[in-house]
Length: 206
Image (cartoon, rainbow, N blue to C red):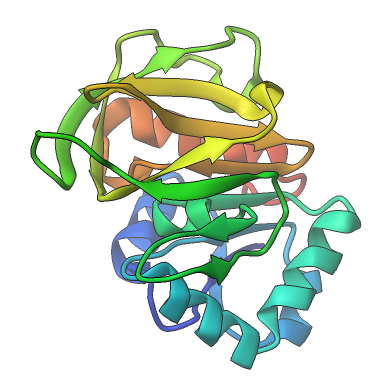
């Protein structure tokens, strides 16, 4: 069973529908005690980093997610959910993240349109990662974000996109993964990545 984490700030419906199209058994989970029952977890997110972490902490999900990943459980963060995986964000102040991957979240800065919104190309940093199996260099995916991740460990950077600079698009370290874009809204490339994550979660496919 795949778990979609509900902490009050995620677009759960479209993600759940995408997983149903892949014929994946999934459930919405908000109770920290239920995480261990899932063969894989997805952490979605829409909104502000600080508010998201506040909700996560109040629900006791921060420690539960750390324990889950320390025990080898696969976790995929999407959009804000990817940013929450990292150490720190400067969005509307200074906020500590989950610290599952090293790095910081910073605001786009420059004389160009913010947020970065719409379809943009993936530029792969590796061609042999299981999360990117079947994904092609140059595939288009759908972004909506005003802040972006600066990973501290280059090995965690799996793919980037170009938006007036190199922008982190896909990350991975151990069994912790993230996409800055919304795979459930990103056509075939996005669905392929969701399917790849499901394959990494033993026992999830029906």
